[in-house]
Image (cartoon, rainbow, N blue to C red; front, side):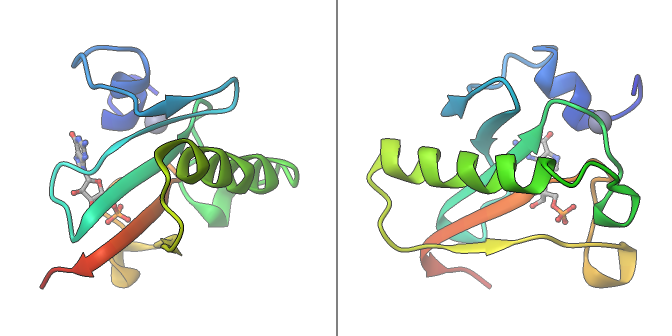
Length: 106
Ligand code: 5GP
Ligand code: ZN
């Protein structure tokens, strides 16, 4: 989607460093980290949120991407979060999984 910030990041518009990527997703650092380590796993396809997801295999692929990322980076203990909807704190309407590790901030 042309006006989606995460689609722009995926397309390389901002030269964002990907700490991991595969055919399904890219992973980069959250710009406003809420923990010592705060990464975002973002599918290459634009899906607004979990509420719009109709590909039942995508979440499994994203969770495998979480596992591959944490394994690569040696992160043994972490929390995963998906915010769905504005009232739940979703700010970017392109589905993503937060990976949070270490001390939480705020
Ligand atoms: P949400 O609140 O939608 O679950 O999470 C969106 C996250 O994306 C927030 O934690 C926010 O800090 C992060 N974010 C928003 N814009 C950018 C950006 O341009 N670059 C990066 N790396 N993270 C962003
Ligand atoms: Zn998008």
